[in-house]
Image (cartoon, rainbow, N blue to C red; front, top):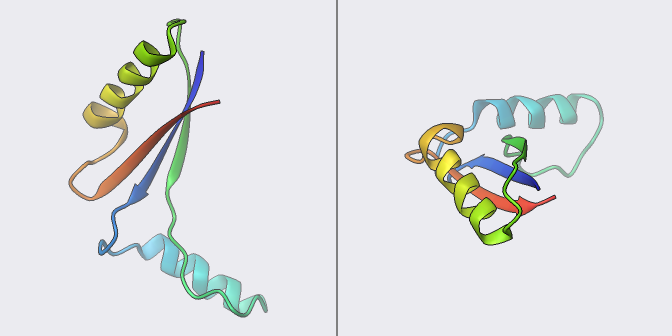
Length: 79
């Protein structure tokens, strides 16, 4: 089963990568971009066939390794 874990900085946490992207977009002529938040997407292919168990395992992986839960939030979806 394939799962997607999306990790993003929490609201209120500085995002220098997002700021740099927003600035570069403006330089390239893409006006009207008010804010950019940069995160990461991790695709997992797990052997578990039970969707609930697969999701629970992915959430545990995110809490323990994939996301720094102090400054990042995460979301798990089936792919």
